[in-house]
Image (cartoon, rainbow, N blue to C red; front, side, top):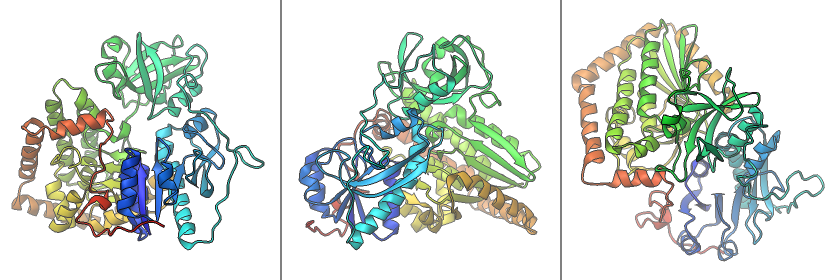
Length: 570
């Protein structure tokens, strides 16, 4: 079928559906929901059999849904209505939740239901649920709905809120009053529930040191306490604030009226205010915790979990130090596990935007990432494995490819390109790694296409070596089993020797330092040259400036080079 994805932003769910639907042979194109006239024009150009809306912030125009069937992906159980569905589910401690695919009509979220899928809730942030359980349930429900629509004969059911046997109900948009924290009475668990209900948008409005801020990225602060509401310590990016029965780490803040009104590490926003407070080392057992290393026999596992996958200069240098420590251990395999939400998305664009000189901070950040990439490529005594349980983008994709083996969880989506960030050239040794793994032609196609890539396609392209089926919760266990099998291989020594010979031959052909220098020369022009495209694109991305048009790479119906013949929907 011909399917038009209509979405407010090409977010993780929209990308996953784009990948899944294309893998099943559907002709998929994308339009960002800018205004009704643009949407009507997209329908005219694309002539879709079906419109699917995975992420909208407003209703689809009647002139569109009357012309072509439109499926809305609603992050709520059957009968649930309202724009804050997942927020309420977290705040009200629902034990299970779901996703419903319904047909657009005049009343929001009230159309007939084509499919639904439920899942057990976890005690995590809204953004984590959205990227994991909500996305998996949405994919299952959308594929079922599309299959029913294609086969015909299915009669979608109308579900009234709070009807007999219906758990869902009409709920209003959640306000800041609904999730406001009362530091004099809220427990640690309640504070975390409120922060998690607003993470990553819109955050929880609060006052700290007489400044209005929004709170994000909350974790329990083990072993800390103080007068309720007081800030008692800091650790890496986070500050600890006392509750009535403990304390919480707050990793990120946004100060809407500040000089930089976007998310930043809490200790960056309140640097002067927390300077004299006790410090807990960030990666200590009682710290905020971003990097951790553990061993199981001859396998070393390095976890690194940075908010939204952003790896700033200081964070990357800490990770490099942890990696170098891991290489000095008597292990045979080092597994780079990344985080639960993202493996890595490369440079921390928010910190760069807030820097006194964004160009200088960009330069420092990319060099820190290159130092890490080079250290992994030059590892001679262990096999290295990048195990991606979460998505990766831009430099994070190529940082993963520095490992000897790349394993992906089924369902992971990669964005192996830099160009959407103002034609950024990129580094992390991709000009060496990608052609070596994928071949020159495929390497060119990967970087120029600017499209999301699913696990199966990533393996076919050489971006990864294998994919691992199963839920995110079982991924680490599966990776551990495979890593132990590598250790037990009788030809492990021969494999290491072969790796070293290949690296030495490549070095003799063209030194790694030369690849890096050539990439960085392009990056220097991106950062310091006359063309401001990178700086404009970064600022727009960080400040959430809505796009004025859909990129032609995903809006195939607007690309004259594509054979996308116009067909009117009946």
